[in-house]
Length: 237
Ligand code: SAM
Image (cartoon, rainbow, N blue to C red):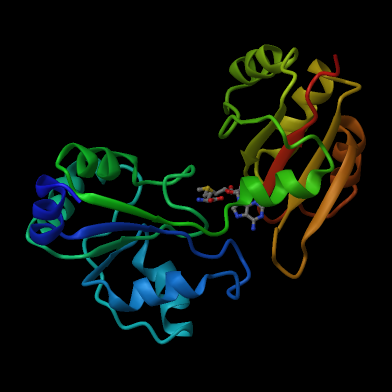
């Protein structure tokens, strides 16, 4: 270790990025539990939601300032100061891996800039769980976040992905999954897709077929509920 590195390690705390379950409470690593118990503070996205997990595992570590969407720019410096004072911090989000469609990027960016040690503690993330079970190629894939909400933008978004040869992974909410599938059916009518719903939970399921076939199956239901990952097979060459 260089002099600068050991100095940094001695004075400042460590920022741990800890993945938590995406549904099934058993999907947490032994290392994650150890770290959540031993750090000085847990910075959560929503303390009410994280409390369920922490209580389940008997973790009594205090919460630091929460880091939900919108407040990150204002709160980051507070967390950074705690790290600079030597406090060890674990960042968790409501579900899965922090920073993956969740807050944390600004904090990590600033921690890196300030020479604070950043340690990932890997675990579940919905995009990887859906991808590996989709049956589509996993050697090359692209995560495109959440499709745009406005119809015109959504259409343009799928048009831009029409010639993508890699497997495409997207997140979608239960309120918009039908609209998204409608657009997808128009833009890529023959493309194979896989919709993963409620991953790791009791009602986990995978709906496979064209966008129109999956749409029809969902439309037959009285209500569309749950969390969704949409996986689109890449264009075949
Ligand atoms: N950080 C999380 C991760 O690592 O996957 C993602 C958080 S993002 C705010 C929430 C979105 O992730 C949901 O709207 C859904 O698209 C997807 N998601 C999370 N958990 C899921 C699950 N159990 N089954 C299916 N999709 C899930």
